[in-house]
Length: 248
Image (tube, rainbow, N blue to C red; front, side, top):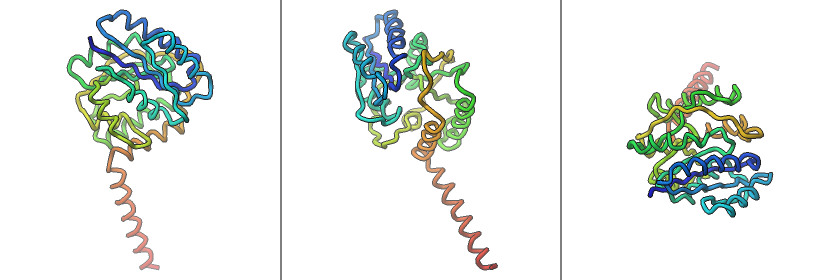
């Protein structure tokens, strides 16, 4: 029996996480040939999230709840969840309902065709316009900076084989860029077109500043090209300064 670990970083999700775990449990009951665990990591949320996930863990042995001592950010919370996972396949989901559990086995079925990483390719988005534009720019820039093959898809709703997660956990940068690490480990990737869900409640805690920070960390952690660009531009400006000094 193969085991599936469903990892979910939680932040301000006291009003969404119960409905999400209910949906996951309902989907898993349709596939009794798999064992599963749901790993919830509270990223020091200021609301009642940890109490809610602790109650869920007490009621259901498939659920494990963890609490970080301070707010480290979504990627670090996800790394913590990965470190506690024991499944053959590791699923990554958001805590707000935008990643519908009914598509879990669409992703897993594709993974079992021989891929190491399969993610959702959302055919519609319910995000704000600036997020959609930012996602497109981020994708374009990363394909240039990190030599990701054109047409490759990345999303935060994905399933990965455990050996890839083992390699990711060897990385000790305090600001991990997990998508970049996946592409550094394997090129056996695929995507599945699915509908993008609606938030169950509240608003996203991932603002424009967080998105820029994640993007900058990604392009500087996993590519030497920004350093080369900085070196070349520095040389050009220094040479221009020297010429201006001679002329003056």
